[in-house]
Length: 221
Image (cartoon, rainbow, N blue to C red; front, side, top):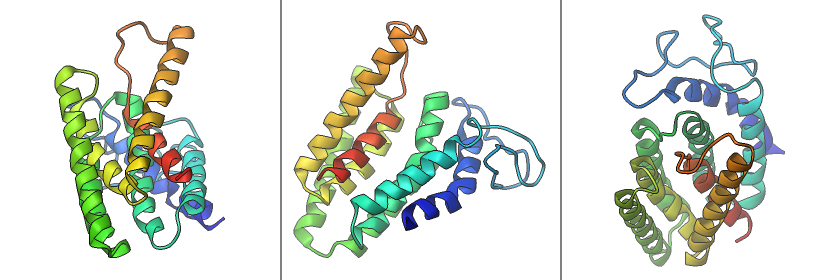
């Protein structure tokens, strides 16, 4: 249960990140206090007591579940790069779900950290080349999709990190992750339509489906 405990330990910082970045495009980041301040499960800032962000316990529950899943799905030392992705992924999923955007302030550090960690956990040149190619290929695919309209630029910037991590487990894992993401996004869209929470042509967040699809692909590799 080490992964679950680490997720619980990181949850206050992850909640603070969600509150800080879950703002519409063009608006300043939320900062009730100078600098990022951890938040308790009830959603109140530890310094000023202002409440904000997802419902109480939501981030914490997801962080624990993802931490447990990452520990069970990945072996050492791959768990380091997958854990890095998972920490950013929890914040990105909540932010995208709330305001339909994946901020550069999260996707770009995620990509930089992934690029640094991959050579540390994998020393085979052929596998590293595969990770590079998968990341670039997925970024190119999503760039084309962004031009056509189905996805946003935030998804384009998230894609290379996901592709590179999935490629650690082979190109089949990359394809599986994409299939899972599309299925999850379609299922969520159907639920929203059936419950009348969204109409036809409504903008939907694709980031959470991408991130969860990646985790499922690693789990089932």
